[in-house]
Image 1 (cartoon, rainbow, N blue to C red):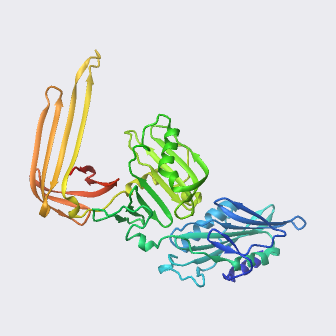
Image 2: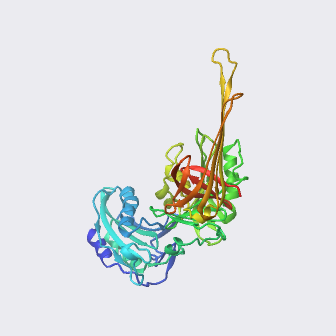
Image 3: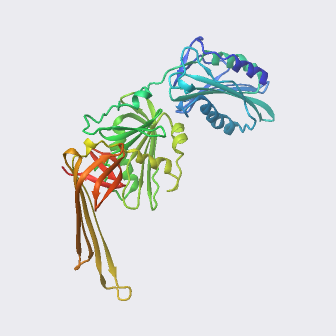
Length: 463
């Protein structure tokens, strides 16, 4: 059996061949209609199956829907082998593999990354099925931040010609996506942020994610995966005692208007000490016409905070590979939850002009443990201001009122000086309470505004 299939994957060449069909990014000539049954499983694969009851032979060919690339052909092949072959057919032996090759006519990106062309790698192994030996072959193509695989499974050399003809007919289509280099230099989306008054509207993170400020959200991208960090929305964020109703309302406001159709729609919130809002569907984007899988997610913390995050991937499989599968517990959502932290932008000195303020207030009510009577209340309130003037000058002041009601004490501090930027992520002030002080600093975006964070303390500009 191995001899037949090994012959196939050593002579693979992508050429024009007969009448073609298109599935996702793969153009190919299907097997002849007689003797083969075609099946299309939505957002997963197109398959062809042939069986022979007399000889007890069979063959299956699966053309898989494209998913997000792991970065290069080697990583993509290993990931696809584990998920499509080893787990599905309980294959334990190491596969016979070919060396990665560049698909003729489509150049490969630097370092074999497949960023601007397609590369291919194949592997073959045998496994036991119905008390006999079958062989499974995986052909993986990697390029343009996408991965596409074709899986063939058979127990007979009678299907060698059919497999060979289909594989030789394959032509890869370039996906519709923005140039990844351009994505990292400037926003290029359907809802640009407009003429921002701030120096930085894009952040390139070390782990490959790129954040761009948009009119209604911060868009975070890596490859063909997109996450929208939605800004606060009064109507979508309105409290609803029925979590399911609140989630459906948010979906209708934040998600549905940008898509033309939805299938396999599910709302699956989880109620607990931290409520999880989770809804998903297979959608069609109005602007691009592309089929995508969309997940709306929000983790409601005990203090009532939480942001709606919209995950947009080519399919459900891609989503689960990157962020994990849905599960009915309130823990284990860190991969999705952390995406809210990518609403983070650098600072230039010119961004800081004006007055920035941060205030806090709180109270503790005491009750006598023996009598149950009121034992007084402690309160605390503070206001901190930075007023940034020309020439990097500033005026700083802090006012605090605290103590038991009826005996509240007031304190204040103030200073003036000059500030300087240490790169774009730290601000140093010459005098804060009598000594120089440096803060880790960044901006986060809300609709039409920026919030200044100094050592994780939020300041809003009031003029």
